Length: 271
Image (cartoon, rainbow, N blue to C red; front, side, top):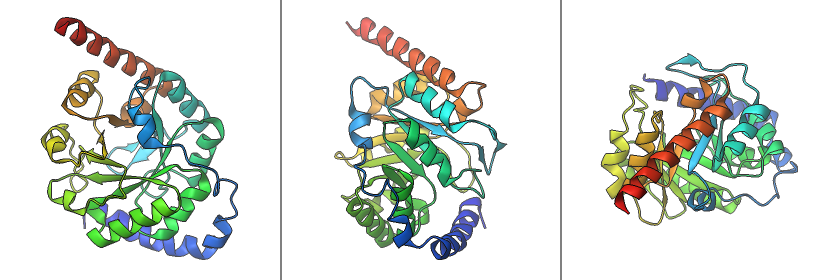
């Protein structure tokens, strides 16, 4: 059993338990449930933003602790002040040290799109995402059947949530459905956890034209973001690189500055 299979097996047990403790009808009473969402797709396409989805991430199964005592308030506000387009918040507890409360806390302090980063396998988690203040959810093609992904995407849209579908291979693109708003290429192989941006570069030409294109994981070099943007990507999900720094917000600001500097040099060279 690989890491992804372990996570999904645990998630099934977790969802069964949580849906008993916190029924869907209870979640629907949340103040966030009827609040209009902020569009992740629109923010990633805004010319005055960086395209970076800055992630709050305490730990990972492959790397262990990254920044276990980080403040959601301080880090999320720092990301927004740095010029990030959106936030991503890990809510998985068992493997990533996250909590639903982390996303709700980020929501309190920020008016921007917030992606709930988790392993979603059940409609209950969509209702949960809406109730904690999320604007968008992640659907990972590698752990969902085609019909299951289509059903979850349709249910998410009915709740007002936007959908980021994550793939790692060309074959997984067969699971694409029109209810998907953005398609992310994970540079990390979820079976081996090895990382290479070659995954994004190889798949970009095969991605659906109508979906916003996002490159995810292993992005720690501003030059790589410039290369990915020039190849057609509009969003860049970065977490570990920022979270390993003493001040993630400051690291995000410097990263964005470097990207803008490199793009400025290229623009001048062409002009």
